[in-house]
Structure formats: structure tokens, C-alpha cells
Amino acid sequence: MKFCPVCKIAYSDNAEYCKKCEAYLQPKQESPQPVKTDAGRLVKMCLYTGAFIVFIMLLYYLLGMLIK
Image 1 (cartoon, rainbow, N blue to C red):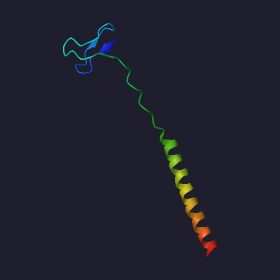
Image 2 (cartoon, rainbow, N blue to C red):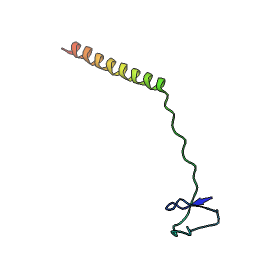
Image 3 (tube, rainbow, N blue to C red):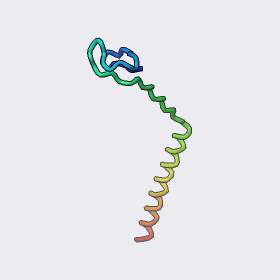
């Protein structure tokens, strides 16, 4: 099945142009599935990232104290 991108009218597979506006017909495509967000996984990743940043800051601080 094809459809007109301008008029949004459906046509058979054999048609090439829209009868109303004469636009080139495009094949009908299925809409993409929405992406599901896992809130628990997102929270874990934020916590791990925050802990990693704090670890790097602590390491930087301790190395700074050793160099002095």
C-alpha cells in the first residue's frame, strides 16, 4: 500500500501519483515503537556516575596532598 505524503490518502501498490495533488506516492511505513525507559536502571547509572566522579575528585585531592 502506498500513500500520498501531501494529502495522506492511501492508494494501491500499482499507483505512482496522487490523483488529487499529483505528488509521487511513497510506500506505507510502520511507525517506530516507542522506547521504554527503565527508571530503576537510570537511577543506578546516575548513582554509579556520581560515585565515580566523587572517587576521581578524592583521588585528585589525595594526590595533590602527596605532591606538596
